[in-house]
Length: 439
Ligand code: SF4
Image (cartoon, rainbow, N blue to C red):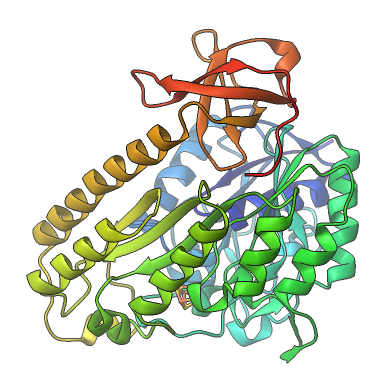
């Protein structure tokens, strides 16, 4: 039996796809092993968003060769789609597969026999037009379920449409089937994942279903206690979705909504499909219906043309928003996008300074959000990891709770009251015995 090991870089989507490719291997008689277990085959799933994608890829290839010098090394994922030739020239790489080919790798690389030169199978991205359903089984508590792939937007900083192709989705019927399968395995929480998740519903370029339809159908899936929406564009987060989530016991009061900039001038240059007023409106609607809802925000700083005044505008805008945490990214040039050609380049040092300022703001926002939850009752889903006798889990509204490790609590929903914030910034809790209702 041949042994195969995996390494994943990048986002939740990549993790769910690696998991699925792993299951394809297992169905075909391969044994899935750890990276260090001298496998016969390595599959490295790359990301184009990460900085230094090339360097990271080289490093992992080297590492793989160290553990298993004769292994067949396959590279796939977003970076493989964007730079197949460059990757094929990395010493040690045996095969590179693009977006349209990655799920067929067991057939394409029949036998995994090393050739003199690396094999490259990467069709133009326009051919990556099929949806492949995927989900991850990370730990036993949470699963990332891919419901949508690709993106038809053209944000001026983003290479994802070039690496993953046009927007396409699974059908509601298939997603519900997958959710039931996941429930049977004992997992209690599903995170709905996509590149542009809110754009769910396009099949072969035609809109046949909507994300709201999907949410309503999934809400009926028994045995899945929790659904989260991983990230949704503000222009696609319609009031009807917010209202539905506020009434649902299965969809958690937690949204992650990319903002990218709080300056309308920069949003326009970024080619985002909304202005800051729409974003503020979404946050206000959510908070009016779910006062303890967690709201996460993505922000890019140092985009070309972002002056100090524009940045301060972003800072003040976010400071005034009732949001719970930020994911901050210093702008980074990507080949074949419009932004690098734009005037007003911001120095790397300045990008980092602005990112640091927003990261401090994020800490303050998070602390304030946690403090607002002290004394309130929630349900925590405890995870399997133990560190120094402590286990952790998430509440419905994405508060991270630490508790003394108790194996019986793993993958259980426990009713608790939040009592305070500990020295590491996690929340502490006491057990309660009442049923917790929706917040
Ligand atoms: S919405 Fe914009 S940032 Fe997001 S994947 Fe599409 S093009 Fe990229």
